[in-house]
Amino acid sequence: MAITDIPILSMLRTRLQWSQERQRVLAENVANADTPSYRARDLAPPKFEAPTALAAAPVTTVSLTRTANGHIAGIEQSESPFRAQSDGDYEVRPTGNAVNLEQEMMKVAANQMDYQAVTALYTRSLSLIKTALGKN
Image (cartoon, rainbow, N blue to C red; front, side):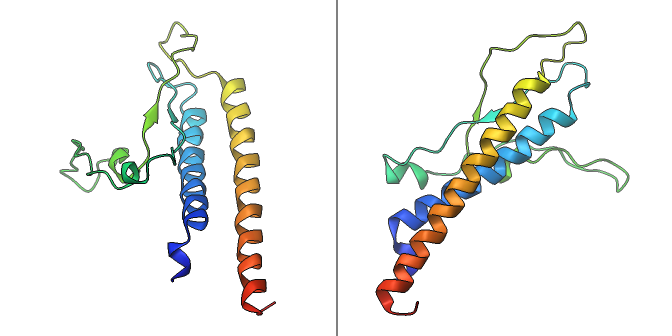
């Protein structure tokens, strides 16, 4: 049995990838705090109840095409395997921007704590496996 086949390690890796992707999305929200008509985005947490849901068919999306080297590349949302989530509990400023920096920074801090907890669990799981194998 390969180490990648152990379900708990697979779930922890998925959670770590989700935390990394969520950090990127939250950073975009903070970076666009003054952009007119920008709406804050977030990712829905991964669900581990149905293992077949993780291997669902990929969703095709329309992406922007760069027709010249001087054009700025668009945001590639198709790269992420995680679903986007919108809360709808935002306050819109007169410019149309709906990013609340306090909420975003609280989400960033919570995401960081979750990442650290999952990293600790992953490390401990690996050390348990090493101990069981007599490699410790």
